[in-house]
Length: 200
Image 1: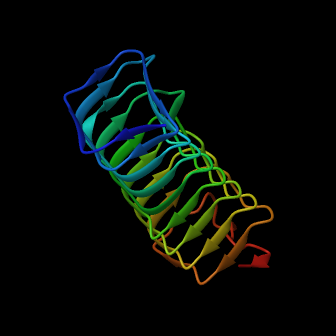
Image 2: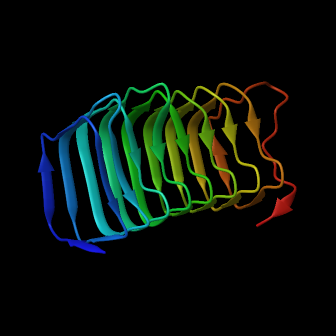
Image 3: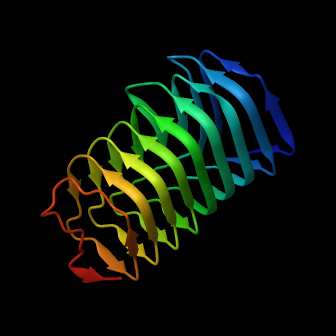
């Protein structure tokens, strides 16, 4: 394992692959970085106390899968790839903030554990996968899902949804929910009802 402490990456340009596997990160601050079309920034099976990513353009992908992340903040970033934008599959985080972001490609939150996460002013252009994810006390505000969204098998408890638009199909087979609140929602159709059959 690699120990990284107080790492600051400013104006970074990644054309290829930057991968840190089984790393321990105390503090990583990325400012106005650009990832090329075939580039990838990946923290795989790692532990991070703080990851802050501000500004820049990600033409490739950002991957944080299988990692234990205490505080993650990604803001004012444009993900332009029509393929894969962001992968947090099987990650866990106690404080995730995604703010002022546009995702053009797919986003994978499968099996992720999110506690008190914040999604604010976010546009998901591609498919979004929340299958078997656990979302607790998470805020979705001014969020638009332009493509399909899957909540199959997910546990949704105590989340707030405000000014959220689902433009296309929403699947939620086998999901569990409790104490979710919905305000100023736009659903795929007037007859659509988001209601899990099981209580969380």
